[in-house]
Image 1 (cartoon, rainbow, N blue to C red):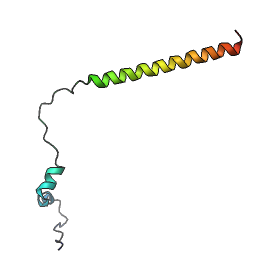
Image 2 (image 1 turned 180 degrees about the vertical axis):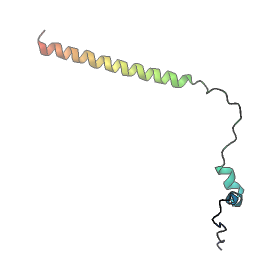
Image 3 (image 1 turned 120 degrees about the horizontal axis):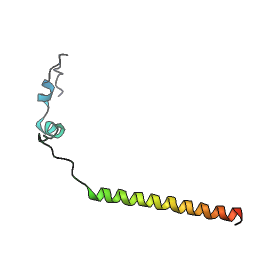
Image 4 (image 1 turned 60 degrees about the vertical axis):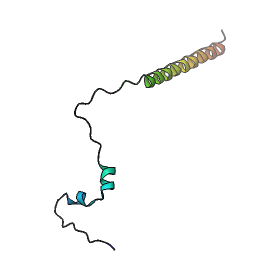
Length: 77
C-alpha cells in the first residue's frame, strides 16, 4: 500500500521526522568537537612525495645528459 504525499507545499521540515531512524543515522553528519587540533603530520606522504620529486629530477638529468651526448656525436667532436 502506498501512503499519500503529505507535503502541502509549505516549507516545513517535517519530512525529516518522517524518515526511519536507520536512514536518519546513515545520512546525518557526525558531530565534530568544537576545538579541533591541527591536521596530523603525515611523514609517510612527505617521504613519498620527496622520493617522487627526486625521481623526476633524476629522469630530467638523465634526459639532458643523453641529449648532450647525442648532440656531441652529431656535431662531430
